[in-house]
Image (spheres, rainbow, N blue to C red):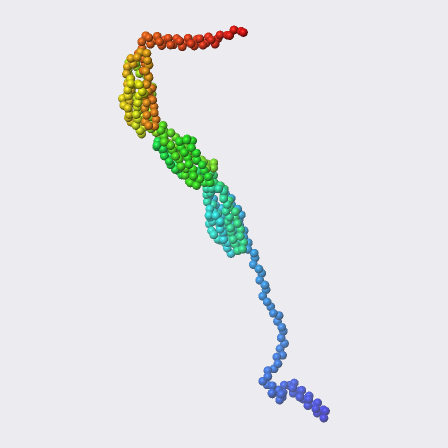
Length: 350
């Protein structure tokens, strides 16, 4: 019995080993076989952390630019690892050939003429988050001054005129070397005012000096002759027998009048008034007084100036006149001799 059971189990195992279907197997046909494939876990991978970008670099070929007052230009080379750069100046007297560029570009810096004091500017270059600057310095210009006119011509009656003044200095001054030219300077103005007084004499000239810093200019003021009064003769000695003389009167612009001193009725004038260039005749009547030398004055005036003609008329020459002259001369000589002798006298000892 035991052998029979053992044989039956062995046969069943055999049938199972050969894959002979059984009733249980038939019932599990629709069930897929178990996956007996052996799997190996694959480790999970992640992307590497990117490296940070390189810091921006910026380098300029110059850090400063110094020049005198004259216009000039220079270049600056910009080197950067940024894609581009910008460049700008903070003063309008500094101009640039470009407002932006890329690494390796050269930008031209232009300086305008400086007509005033020393000045400074800053050029700023920006690339990414980096900036660099160029310090610009330009020297002061020499002092300059320009006057609108170097010569001013004025009529004898006087005038007031303004002359423009241009300078690169903050202040300036003006002075005249003659008191008949008055100078007025308004600190806020760009002109000097010259007031020229009336001229009643000959033509004249003055110099107005305008100074700014160590620079100066001059203005020549020329004024025409005024109503001068000139006579061709101002002294006349008339013969005792009577005589005439002609005198030319110069009186530009205005007329003149003439008058004889009071009591000189022996002297007459051919005309009591006239214009410039007139010729006047003076007539001295005969002097009958053998003891008197007659004198008179003829005065010419034009309202601005007066000029006298001094007239002397000798007395007739007689023996008595000659004796009187000789006596007078001898008396003068004697007086001189007595004075000399008195100076030689030594006082007696006490």
